[in-house]
Image 1 (tube, rainbow, N blue to C red):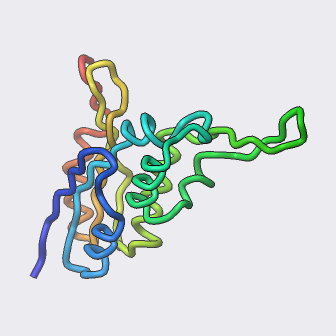
Image 2 (image 1 turned 120 degrees about the vertical axis):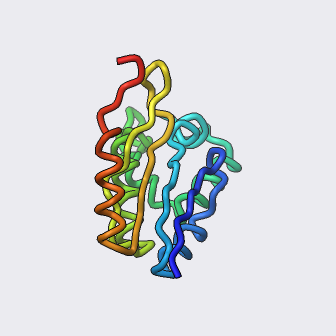
Length: 155
C-alpha cells in the first residue's frame, strides 16, 4: 500500500516525529509546506537571546532537535571577550539543511530541492518540499514542480 500525505501545518505546529514516521514506513510520499515565515517571525531572530521559550520549543519540535541553531547562528566575540550568537543563515540555508535532514535523518530516498512559495510582495512565505521513498515518485514530482520553480507573482 502506498500513500501521499499533504502536510500543511499552521506555522510551527508539526512534530518532526510525524515526518520521521512517514519516512520509516517506506510507503508514504509527502508534500510539506515548510513554514519559513513563521520561523523567521518567532524563532530565527537576528538576536536569538530574545526568542520566547515557547517559540524555541515549537521550533525544536518541528525540526526534531536543536541542530538548526548551528545552521543559522555563529558565535562571534564582542568587546567584552564574550561570544554573541550572530545570525549568519538565511531562508535558503535553512531550507537546504532541512532537505538534507529529510534525506539523512528521516531516511527518505529522494528529496528534490524545494520550491519557494512567495506572496504578492515576492517574500518567501514557505517552501514546498516533496519527499519520497521512491525514485519514480520523485521523478514525477520533479517534472511537476519544475514548472513552478522560477514563478514570481506579478511577473
